[in-house]
Length: 489
Image 1: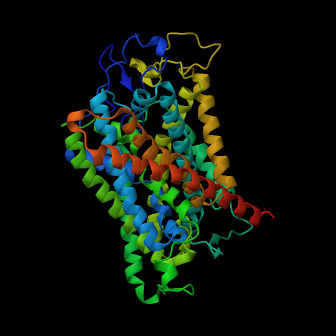
Image 2 (image 1 turned 30 degrees about the horizontal axis):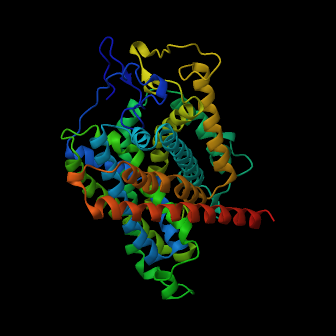
């Protein structure tokens, strides 16, 4: 990772953090030269398991306690278990079908099943998910930075927000204001990072995010146990409502769960780094990785919900208003660092897929191939159509996407709105609907066919995903519109 390429050898821009390359989708050019050989860094079983777990566990886990408040404690626990099972199925079937049909990207698997339209559909949902994920990262940053700065500088607080004196310097006013802090971090930190074409250095740091999430989950568990004698555990709604009943917002909660689990668009990236590259070995690794992810999500969700019940906020750390609590401040530091380091990696996927969607006849195999000496070249002129290699378009795409994510994070400060809508629309499609549809369309060799695994399971996954896609997306939009009308009647 990050090694200098030998003379004449191409080096990939994306080092295990986003799509490495996509095959040419213009059927007229199928006879063209194959994509350049890419040198992968092979990983052992432990490394693959860690990478796979890291691809599953992300910012979505922060909203899981709120999903329990929205959908009901026991129902959401059951859905988390179902989501883990469907995630394991979809990852395994993607790898299995890729092995049978000799494809090594999610997009190309969809193309093998449904042609160029399938390829573009996967790219579209990858773009919308990555875009929504980046909006959620900025929302978390806006929720976290002002109280963190106020705690570090020992500022007075009112209603959970730091209060400044009239003589406070400008930089302090910026960093303690939610909207201004988001814009400042986006401009000063994220823009320079996102303008890069090579994120190898950030890829080396990405593994720290899972460690950070484990620490945060441990802190929440510690807070729940240490303050158990002060927690009500049952509010005025009663035990049945708090722990058993299905709540009204169960379908938006499904979107948040899917948002937390989605990793199918990164499955091949992990699989292609395996030393023992086989579907059987990947199945064993996936079992442990999904199990560890489920455990971490539950450890994050259950203590967070038990402490606040129906009053749980979409960003669990917003519930903690005690500015002298050092444990929560440590969690906030970890969260901000994780969001800042993760944003550019997901941003690369959004920019990449947007370029494909806008100029899908460009040789996608060369979209993000960095030549020796850092020069990116194209074999066709830059005018008339969008040139994927043009510095001008690179800067334009980067600044436009960054500005759009900042704008949405400022307009809707509720993390739950973003995770539920993005999860319902994009994550459900990527995680449940499309893998099952490819499975049913392509099929498997007759000698390995199983009526349960190759017929019943994909139909069940497709049915669940289709219902969740339609109903959860619709209810998420309705809830967002209702909340907006209540705030701005």
